Image (cartoon, rainbow, N blue to C red; front, side):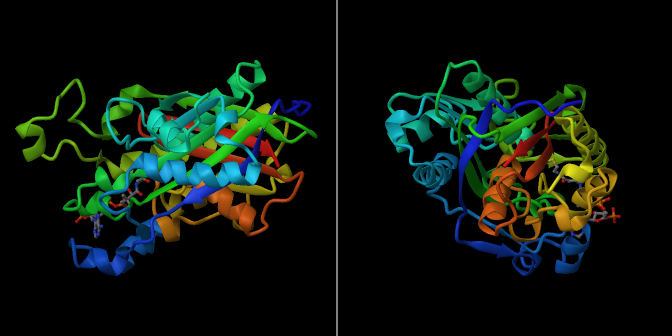
Length: 330
Ligand code: ACO
């Protein structure tokens, strides 16, 4: 299959990470765990934690500001802001509206996409559709997560995994053959209760029982999620390559969702991509849900791992379950 002509491209990226670092040694003092266990099972050494007064919109707006400055885009030029988040500042209104207000993007539509760790790729696909069909010219995709706010800090099986942070990209119509070559998205809601927050929404409204049973925090069946993540990310990698008319040999950089180094290594092996071509920062940030991919993309660019013409494969998996992939020509 011939590679499709890209219609839409990412023109600039930005990231914002809280300064406070929580190390595995810090966690050893909070729950019954060890640096060795965490590193061996997950590859994580440390993660960032946002302070109490910082929310998802604050972090997302900072990342977006950096991306807009690099793209030379003024707030009034932005048509569309799509925020991917599993940690909205409030259940109502959308965090995207709070980002819109902070940026002063007075001409932008704004809404959230809820697809957990796959959120960035889901949001990018939505924005691609708007721009490709001429319904928007300049859009922001912002992925921002304050995972520390939905983490049960007494549950050692989950609290060692997550971190806070935000990434953003400016998206426009493609020029010079750069841009999005393919997308693939899937879901399986029958497995929702393997990774979820059971209480605090409309179905089980927040009350004393939710509070006492800690149902407003993330619950996860780690082993089942692990297996589903590897299986789904492998499928997603295959499908994005197929749809882009490429093979793994054509990929210059693979950026997988950063949840666990063992999931990353297994997915890379399945996709036939050597670890030298894989971007990894899970050791420094843990799992920042939807924010992992744009933060990694921004860092990879800064480190010179992407050149004009590089082919980038991005793959994600998250609660829902949702999974998604995309191939970009940089
Ligand atoms: N420290 C020490 N021991 C621990 C810890 C901890 N932090 N957490 C669990 N254990 C213990 C368990 O109690 C268990 O003890 P037992 O054998 O006496 O019962 C033992 O370690 C093994 O537990 P498992 O859960 O089987 O360990 P596993 O090897 O599966 O690793 C992990 C757990 C790291 C959570 C793994 O399952 C995993 O990474 N799953 C995927 C999680 C993930 O990536 N989720 C997010 C993806 S989607 C998204 O990003 C939203």
